[in-house]
Amino acid sequence: MKWVKMIEIKNLTKKYNENIILDNLSLIIKDGEAVGVLGANGAGKTTLVEIISGVTEPTEGKILFYDKDNKIEKNIQEKIGVQFQSGNWPFNTKGTDFLNLFIGKKWKKDEYVNKLIEIFEVKEIIVKRLSDCSGGEQQRFNSMLSIIKKPSVLILDELITGLDLKMQIKLINFFDNLRKKEKITLIIISHIPEEIEQICNRIIVLDKGKIYMDKKIKEIKKEYSSVRSFLELFFEGKLQ
Ligand SMILES: Nc1ncnc2c1ncn2[C@@H]1O[C@H](COP(=O)(O)OP(=O)(O)OP(=O)(O)O)[C@@H](O)[C@H]1O
Image 1 (spheres, rainbow, N blue to C red):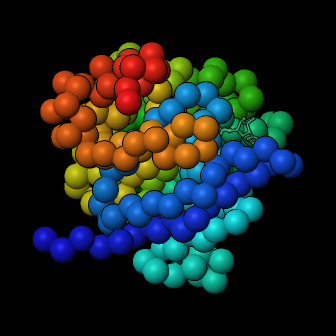
Image 2 (image 1 turned 30 degrees about the vertical axis):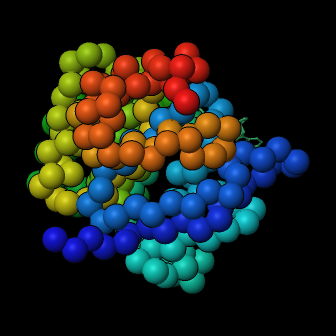
């Protein structure tokens, strides 16, 4: 089957003052791929996905979606769903306020939204002030919001960090099935190799703002038996 180039990153550099966070990075993500982005704290993972989603401007370089510049085609970014690590909710905001805003009052009768509320177990959470919710509860709500508009590219930043094991298993399976059924393109940042191994078919390892490795999960497993063993060698500095 012929593959389609979905996201193309060309010579991307991001600097904060004189600090180079992303260093002349180029990358192509194909339609329907599930890419895991790994690397140490501060490697530039969140900055990279913030730039892809349009939250942050690059210092240099370009992001193209289906060969179109995202600066010109702003509506392309509406097809991107993002779940970032945490939300800064305005005081007093409830989950239901966000649902009213995103979907309109009709969300109560929307079958898809109600199914998501059930899967993410947020029925009791959305009626509380988000600032009063626990970290894990906010995380569940954030993840649910990321797919509420049925995006064609979904970015998950540390999806399961801070969730209890039951929820971790449930959400990994949910996103894995969603990707297979809906054929969405997934970009997942995680420090949990098993999450990446189950959902993704490719990994990108960032090291100090550069791509250290870009490989198919199949090849990683063949060479190192698992993503965890590969990462252990990487972080111990035992890879060439
Ligand atoms: N708004 C900002 N201003 C200045 N420096 C920033 C800003 N945002 C990020 N950085 C810096 O950029 C670097 C990369 O941050 P980023 O959040 O992309 O890393 P990460 O790989 O996602 O890390 P983690 O695994 O800890 O989440 C860090 O050194 C961070 O301090």
